[in-house]
Every structure is written in structure tokens, then in C-alpha cells.
Image 1 (cartoon, rainbow, N blue to C red):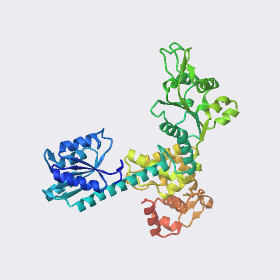
Image 2 (image 1 turned 90 degrees about the horizontal axis):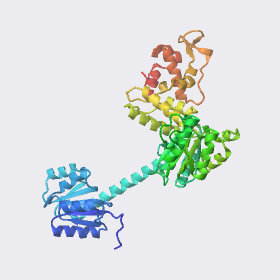
Image 3 (image 1 turned 180 degrees about the vertical axis):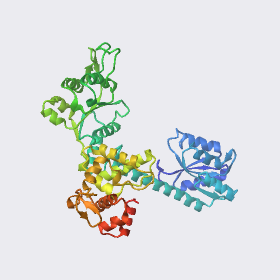
Image 4 (image 1 turned 120 degrees about the horizontal axis):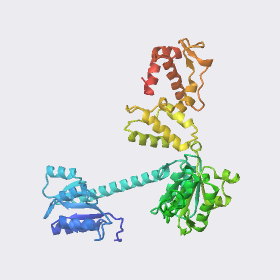
Length: 486
């Protein structure tokens, strides 16, 4: 028989009767499994705590077949410890010559996979073992598929299904374990910091310091001190020695966000750090050596270089590996995935039972260009979740932030109570005699706008609205019910 591999299922037999224990062990070995044996609860726990090979417990026992009655306890004790998480076992089969329904039910309640009576029917036992292993293999396959799906759509907190965006992230992962400087470019809100996190988390420096600095948030003087530190007495208020971010990040990574906003003076100092791996604290003359990796981010640093606002030599030093993130408007396939994730997160956080977005709201969010990119979409969903009710229905377009309602809904406000000719004989007036529907909306979303505005003008009189729109009253009720209205 071929030598068993570490992946071969392992089975522990706990039986105080030597003949039964040896017989079961030999049978299970012949079936191709790794077999371990114990004659008591104590010896079984020793095997489980030390591992199959008497080591440190790294390898798990996959299945335990245990007698119910043992010299120092019962098979139920193993089940109780398994349930409490004290031992790492997938499945337990209880065998006993003292068969009773009560004992069987108790064993199953405690987590036993199955129950078999003695003398053991070997064919029945073989079928039980095969079912356990098949079930375990199925669970493993499902977990692998889930992992692959997560890898496709979710790189940490950077969620995407866009092939172009996925290629960028894959490149980031590929270069993560190098020491090369990385420049991440992209509009505000595209996920530059998230991509930096991915690089660090996949690098050899992941357990070392990861220091983040928003260069645009600090003045030139403060930024210089924050990056390089200062000596005691370096300037008024410098009452003690201060270690800067470069010094703290030694051995790890520093992320310089919005690096295009720093002054030319500070740029020259950063260039020295990249070239020589050294610097002096403000007000000091001691040269400090550091081993750091620099990841920088900017919206459009090339424009600043062309204007003379950013050193060209520093740009080349930073731009060893360039990763340019794609704005959300150019990867619209990610919008539904992001909405689902954000809606789930904020609904859970705020105790809301939202069932998703209405078709009308989704149509509007799919057609919007997002100058603020993913960050803006996240803020929109957070707002809509916060102002929604607790009824558990769909979040509709009436809950959109005002600037989106003005763009997509209020510009279609075509009805007014006075000033122009009658619309459709309903007593409702139409502004400019036409309805302005934003480009890109679905027919259903356009219908929702028309029905909603007509209802508002008619003070939510459904019969009057139906007459004015020349549709049946049942149609009004049906459409209102579909969009969760009343």
C-alpha cells in the first residue's frame, strides 16, 4: 500500500477493550486512513493536545470514534470539550453496547456526527466515515470558492470587479515584496491609501512600522518637523527631542499622501532620504540612517513638475513603479457591488433593516459621474441609510442627498399649481408644457418621477392623479406598492 500523506484523513479510536480497539484500527488502516488509538479519555486527550505525531498539536485528528463507556469517563466528555473549543476535531462518532434513545439524543445534541451500536457493523461504520469525509471535502471546496470570489471582488477594503482595476491591484501585489518606491496617482477618493495598504500587507515589511502622513494637511514648518523630527531647542516651543516619521518608520514603510503639495525645500530633503537613506533632525547635525520604503500618492504630480512646482529629480525617484487608479465613472461595473457593500455595512451599523435600493435610486446612482469617486458614493449611501426608516423596505430615490435630487429629480419638477395652462384636464399645471427627464434614467424611474410629482401637486389624491395622467386607479396603486409608497 502506498505511504499515507499528511492530507490523508486521520481517525482516533477511543476504546478500552483491547481486542475491539485493535480490530477497528486494523480495519480502518486497510481502508486507507491514518489511525491512532487510545484506551481512555486521558490518553485520548494526550493525543489530541500533542497532535497525531506527539508533536505540538499542529495536525488535527479529523474523526474520533469513541466508546460511550470508558474507565475514566464517557465519550460525551470528549463531545463536551469539543463543543467548548478545548480540542480541535471535526467530527465524532459515538459507539456503545448500551444503546438507548436517550443517550443517542444526548450525544447528537452535544455535537456527535452520528451514533453506532456495538458490536460495530463495519460496513455501516465505513459509510459513516465516507459521509464525514465527503462533507468535509465539500465544505473545503466551498471555502476555496468563497476565497477566490473574495480575491476577485475584494482586495482588503478595495472592492472591484473591473478588469482594469483588478490588473492595477495585481500589479501592486506583484511588486509589494520589493523595496522599490511606488507612486500612486489618481483622483481624490479613488482609493490611493487602500492600495498602499494592500502593498504593505503583502510585503516583507508588513510586521514593521507603517507610517502615514497627509502632506497637504500640514504647514511647511510643521511638516518638516513631523517628517524629520527636531532637536530640543531647535525653535521656540521645541522643549524636547522629537523623533520624526522617517525615524519612526525605520525598517518599515512610510506613505506620503498628497506629496505634490509639499514645498521645494522639503522636497530636497525627501530626495536625500530616497538617495542616501539618511537625514538630520531640524536643528541638529547628527546624521540618522534609516531603512525605509516610500510609497507616495498624488492626484496629478506631472502638472506640478511641468509648472516647476515639483522637483523633476524627486519625481523620477518616486516614479519607479507607477500605479494610476481609475475613476469610478470609468468603471461603472463596480457601482452596484460598492452600493451593496456600503448599504450592508451602514444598515448593520445603524440598526436598519434595509432591503436594498429601489430601481429608480439605482438608475440615478448608476448614471452619476462621481467627481468624489468611491468616497463620494460611500457618503451618499451612508446618508441614505441614516435618513431611511426602520421598516425594512427598499431605499428609494426620495432619500437621495439634496444635490442629487436637484440634479435628477427637481429638474424634472414640471408641475406647478399656478401660472401655466392646465395639464391633462386634472387641474395640475405644467411648467413650459413639457417634462424634463435627465438622460440615462430608465423608463421605470421616469414614471416614478412623473407619478410622484403629480401626487405631490394633487395633495396625494390618487384618483385625481390617475385622471390627470390618463391611467387607471389600479395602475397607480400597483406602481406605488411596487416602489414601497402609500
